Amino acid sequence: MNEKSEDGIINSSLGSITQGASIHFIGKVISNILGFILNALLTRGLGATQYGLYAYGNTIITISAALARMGSGKAVLRFLPAYDDRPQRQNKVIGLAYLTSFLSGIFLGVILYVTAPLISTHTLRNPLLVDVIRVLAIVLPFNTAFKLTNAIFRAKERMEYLVLVGQILRPLSYITVVTIALGVGYLLDGVIFGIAVASVLLFGISLHILVNRLGMTPNIWENNEKDIKSFYNYSLPLVLKDVGQLLYKRVDIIMVGILLIESDVGIYKVGWLIAGVITLPLGAFNQIFPPVASRLYSKNNMGELNSVYKRITRWTLTIAIPPALIAVVYGQEILGIFGPEFTKGVLVLALFTTAQLTNCAVGPTGFLLMMTDHQYLSMLNQGALGILNIVLNYIFILRFGLIGAAIATGGVLAFINLLRVWEIWHLESLFPYNSKILKPVAAGIISGVIMYVMSLLLSGYILLISGIVLGCSAFVLLLYTLGIEEEDLTFFKNQIIQ
Image 1: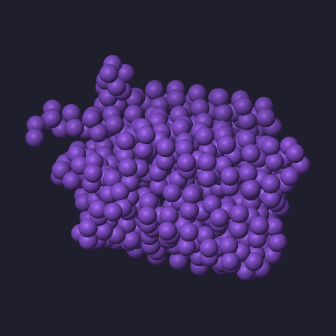
Image 2: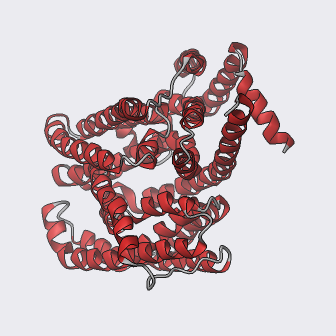
């Protein structure tokens, strides 16, 4: 293959990824704004203790929903692009995925409903938690199927639908029902009931779009033994992978609830949510990267895949640096927006922000492992590190309290990302770094110093606004001064022309 053809494949793949990432990024910005409003309403309306109960129950349901999908979300990301020219085969994959998710959701929902009093007794010891878990357990199958539908939108590279339903309608509907519930005098019970009703309606909307807009009809009847075996050979190892991922991403909240108190759960969850903004660019690029990586790998275009991998990683880190600096330097001011009691989590926020910046610094390495058929290694990674996270959280929470949970989970998150980089390099000779990545790093260090100096001169909301404007402006100016890569300028100029 000549150099011109390779550039064409790289730019075509990057174009598909950046187009999807742009749509997702815009939607995610809107989603984060709406999510910020939602959590501000909840923290102000419920207080730290009841918000902690909400966050704890929601975490249990989130873990259960991920288990209930049984790896089907990852399977549709892997198989739908591979069957792009066989729509009937795609319908069979989708049918099998829905059947798996819905039945598993019902099974786990029943278990949660029955064991809710036991969970409450051994964790937060609050009867309100029983009501929260039971109401959310009833709609667990719908939540599971809703998440699967979003995965199908990703696999079909129809980001506009994922953004519309998953990132705009979902938080907007939650804000509406929470506002109504709090406005008429209900507290936690009313809020949870409203969110449950909204969840069922959202699944109905997403399924309507899938069938009537994308023309896809789930088919559960025509799968033969070979189809079923192929589907579960890929999806089931990823169940254990998802379990491990949840153990190092969510078990900390569960253990904070067991070992500490409700208000600590709420404070901890707010720190985690704010730090999650750092991964916005990674999440955007990860929406379309998996199907593109699957196609390139299936066609053995490894050189092109490595070039896409390097550039996506550099872009992801570059975009993530400014919000990471804001969260670390101005954490006290940001947390104060949720209420004075939440400023206790400033160190938690700083630790999580550092871990999430590491997450962005390795790019889409986790998905690259899965799309290159290393699903069993992904399973082992997450399982081992999930167990390690449980052990470290137990030790560190008992010794350091709330901060200990952030140290344990943040450290495990950073470690697994570095481990994945080594694995994909060792197994497939794919590596995400070159000297070009030093420019955004240098710009970030200098901008961070400028923002810190601002914190010595100002305070409160004036510091937050002026510091963000000056810090981000300095970062962009420094990046421009150091020199934007020619390949990036050429690519984005071509995208604008097209």
